[in-house]
Length: 570
Image (cartoon, rainbow, N blue to C red; front, side, top):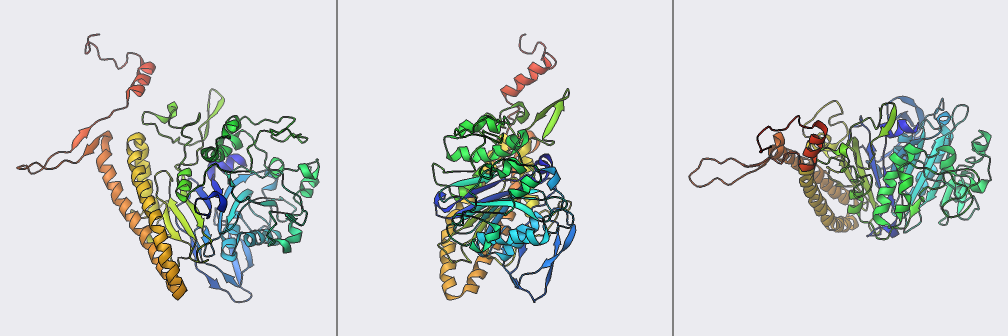
């Protein structure tokens, strides 16, 4: 199940609390990584529904019809994975125990839980209540999932897995990330032990009426432990129960391909993460004691990273964008340095992720930034602004390393045409659709990465910095307008978001033409001024070749095969 997850829908989430951000906002990031996912912006308009209305449910990944559920009386405006109340939800699939992956008759798949939750929730706790209630009433259709759930004040991580055949619903745990801390998940369940219900800081879902008590920081399915006992998955004491170690034990793939992405972000903001390098390289230990010296009576993995850490510096929205572009640079696993990077130091490896030589299995690294990203985003929830105008979803298509994060206000009432759902598809090329524009740029960069990508990165960073610099001015204008006429403020932010998205896509469409002209055929060309008295002049041409290091690799591999005889006096 795990291998199926990270090869098809392998995603990455980073979670930032108010006290850990530079501006007091909450943020979550998400990369929707799949080789068959078309990057487009989803949008649902706010609506009211007649009593007795029903909602058709289709599996998010396949489009398969699953059944109907009761529609809510009112649903909210949703842009991508963020709604008008600044609630954001992201996910990563971890699969978990195979026998829990099928639940006949279940209706709620993970994608429907996300987008229905966004349409119905005004805050993170309400989203957890809705998700838990929907699974309880209608069953859970998917395999194991980790959810990131945020609002302007709180950030939560929620992990869940179905109960399999003969049962209904899911077992799950949701934990609030402490303010000032950060969390992350990347296709490996990460919640281990958790505080058991005491009615003060932790409750089971049976006491869901207390979910809005400010001191509650942990909520879990009432049978999350008893179900594991019933199935024979766990026999220890309740206080030692670990959700991840019971329902989705970490193995080589979980550490090397998944936890490594969490580690790559954590190490950028905390100097003590080197101690986990051996773990994220795939060496999962099961010692008698955990790293803190406490006993490990159930034999769980003993060298895992903490669920959350306190960063040594505050994190900005631009930091978040750049975290999503990581290729393990500056580490032992740096993808630009091994022979697989080729002569142009490419941090990309074409699939499959694992391969064999002489019957021995080997792997490529799986970094945060990857070629198969459909779309990615950072939600930016800000409680000092009006509720409905304070949310921005910074949204981009394709590989985050070559894309641009667009500032889209989550109250916007229509989608930008060039990134709208239905404008092109995975098998329908549309030359000005955002997905195809940025795919042309990234795929061209892959051909000569060390020459082409730095130019893309410079333009990308400058573009995003300009957006970030403009944001306070847009906020100020929208807030002033909101005091006079809230509806006009929504119109203003919609027009701004639509314009900035469409114009950026068209600008980068032209930029692709420039890049192709400049770097085609392995050359690098620079336009020159036409001298007086000439009709035209040819561009300045350079041919950087493969580099001394790679030429030596060729000679080491081929010996004298390419040697020029007599040409250099030898």
